[in-house]
Amino acid sequence: MTPLAKLLEAALFSSGHPVPLDELRALDPDASAAAVAMALDELREHYDTGGHGVELVEIAGGWQILTRPEFTETIERVQLAVRPQRLSSAALETLAIIAYRQPIGRAEIEEIRGVAVGSMLRTLLERGLIDVVGRAEGLGRPMLYGTTPAFLEQFALRHLGELPRADELAVALRSEPRAL
Amino acid sequence: MIDTAELIEAPFVIELEQFSGPLDLLLTLIRDERVEITDIPIARICEQFLARIHSLGLSDAAEYLEMAARLLRIKVQMLLPRHGSGDEWEDPRAELVRRLLEYQQMREVVDLLERRGDDRRERLGRGVTLIEPVRPTRPLSLALPELLAAVDRVLRMARKPVLHDIVPRALDVDGAIETIRALLHLRATARFSDIVSAGAEPWRILSALLALLELARRGELRVRQRRPFGTMDIARDTAGEAA
Image (cartoon, rainbow over all chains, first blue to last red; front, side):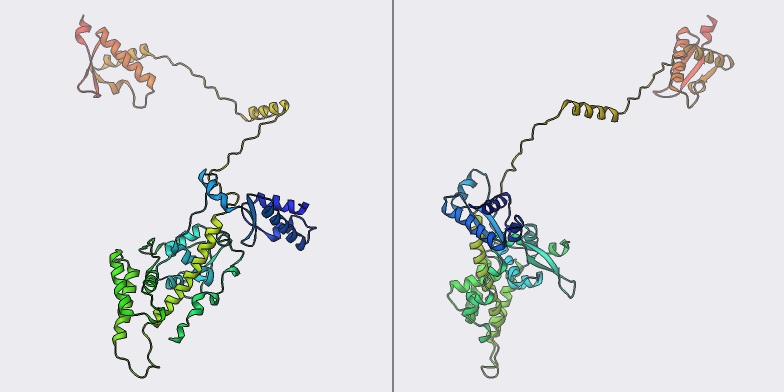
């Protein structure tokens, strides 16, 4: 491996979270953006072909070294590490709405989901998946919510743009509600 | 800062493994019945909805009841005679259909998030350890002069202990005896409070008490106490005096 690839490997290994590209570039001021991208490719290649238990993944606007899926169950069995808990269907619904409509207030979320979401929002806030990103105009100036980088991280998204556009979703194409 | 008041007020939350809300249940029924969302046989679906919330014990959950009421209203509106031509007629189901489509679209995103989330959960990053690793403490390396200097600093900082001199104060029983004798020379009876003044120091009180007992033993006076902790009446013992 090139010295730059080795440097990136060391930096990524030391971090528990995805490391953004600009932080990786800051490791070596002499390296160009292209050189860093090439070194990342080299490192990924190295893990993929050399027979390694870890891989390099692009996630949440950065890069991260993660274990390969086939070992997770065994690692978890001896309690070296645990997978984060799965979110409930209700939590995912709330997150999906916030991801698409952010910034969005509680009332709007409740209108789409058809249930009260107060305690759900609190849970998501506690888990750091959403945050208060502002306040709406109007009566009571309700809080507006948006997703956090931790949301991207937990759902293996590089950025929000990776979610399908609303008009790309199958339902939107299938029927036009106005044509009733 | 987060205004928790807005979050806490949420009333009564029913969350089932099976359904995440009334729209979810409704969508499931529509799928089970294999009907088009845009052309819901409202009477049948409404009936099914009521039966399901009853069997699931959801009849008390406001959100499901609200949906049931909405379905019943649409059912009634569908039965009303239509006015005007077909173009002007507004389908009473339109609003429900719009919401269902919106909800269904969101469910698609949920499926996607679920897949991506599961995929990510299968990979572990660093720092998701269950047990915090215990880092061994490094052995202390220190030169002798450094250690002595540190001890010196500590000793300098420590305050000198304050020593108290304790001076034994002897009881003055003889003095008290003289006082009591002088008093009883003037009066036939007295009280303990006459011998010892109010704010007297303990050694004076003890001296007086021992003097009283001593004089009583010698038969110069008698001490009487009517009840426990009551006042002590002291009287000249005339008999003893005579003897």
